[in-house]
Length: 421
Image (cartoon, rainbow, N blue to C red; front, top):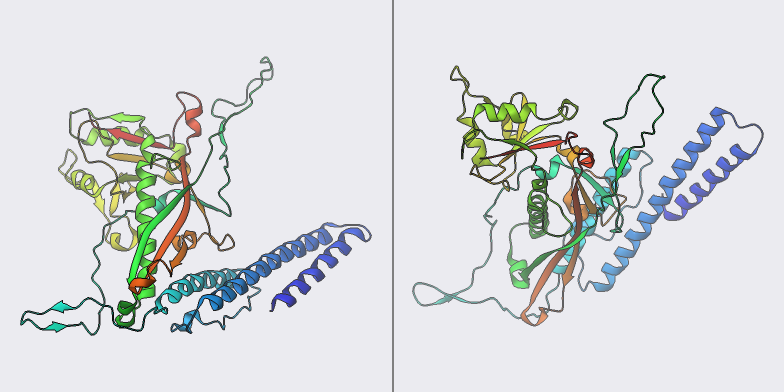
């Protein structure tokens, strides 16, 4: 459907819904039909908004480009026909968002400010100069950011205005005998404020001659590199905090103290497990670093059996195994086993922490893809005199601990921590 057809169909739906609600007696059936029409009209409004944004992005790309894109994915012949099926529409919106990102990168890779060869010449062993003709697929150094990003509750907002996640303590309220004197039991509501930080990735500087000679998909490489850097940075902030508007899970410090200085024993893990209120066991997991997991794997029960049970599909699921039947997940940013440290946390991390991301496209659903939270900018002119182009990325993120039990001393928290004596 074109933009005009979507707007016309939306107007018809609203007119029919008004007629159902204002003509004659409103029954449950007519009310349901009208509510469905209103919901469909709202979906069409968002579709129209997306099409306008896409058209504007295409016009901007055409104004900035000096050459046609080489990548067929970034072609201006974008299909704007959106499916009426909600699931297919969401997939189409995700593809549109990815095409926008690829278009930005392709715009950078297709700009050659100078026609001359500007690559540095390298002196070969025999004393002659040579220039590499092609560049193959790179080998990239990696470092795990663990699975903490996928463990916490993540929300996406269309703006970065301050918001307050409600925390309500209602643990001590219940039913009493009718003969008991009346007393009010209004819940305690915490007003923690969830703010966002503006994050920046240092620019990726590309030589235009290098771009011409690469034999791999440099657009995909830049997208993966940006997403990886974002996940690594945000995961560390979730675990440790960033000293600004991203609080860390390290704030959960109430829990169990080991019985032996500098050592974790079987009894300590039992105490940590039983210290979590059963209300939070349904979605509970253990969180620890790879080094701490190595310590746990060496702990055995009184019969010499390891208490850690490894999973055979850990490479695919991200769960290396289970402890007391609850999955273990790796967080490389937790401290090692040493006196004074909190190397292990156990509990429901989704109920215990909320990460807020400001989406560059709020109509794309939260499917876990970090690329939807990253805004890319191409620096075309800044490095033009050296025949180079830079790509820089920005994101807006905030996070806070959710601990309604902390509103009243003695109430259970969703996450407990183990401190090494």
